[in-house]
Image (cartoon, rainbow, N blue to C red):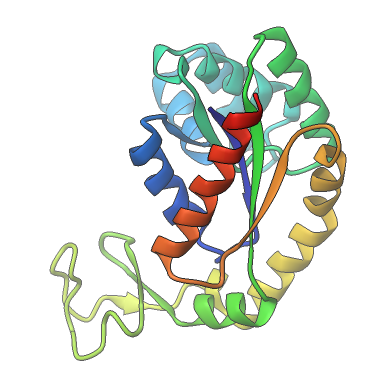
Length: 219
């Protein structure tokens, strides 16, 4: 099973990716993570990406596709993967499709987690991060605590700039402008499942697994 995972910021995409990775025994591929790892490893593509990032520019699509190709070719991705964070534009989606065809990858499905914008704003503005270990928690989880549950640092909680209402609304606007056309591109081209994410983590996960089972029965 090869899953292209979409969803607005704060919709619970990362949580579901980890659960799916564990239950389906396939790796969760975050493009941000593999980009950082490639730079750390000092590969040819990593060196090119680092030079571009050091100049304050975005890594171009051809380099990202090259990094994704290297990742897809790794033994851990033989039985499938969950791709998170790419494609973000229709141009990237078309390039990814070329790569999928080149590598002759099958059983590719698109999963999109949705939620009302009001709920997303509520979730994200309710988060605090630890200055020491960078872990993120809901304010409810930290009620009555003055030290981080992960690293033990005291009085280390703060609200990230990304989690202020103004920034959240802008991130949602960017998502709608850039990523919604990607989903339009995939509609009719690949199986696309829209999963309502305004529910418990467990129920959302059940909905996704049910959709994936339906897809498996078709192929």
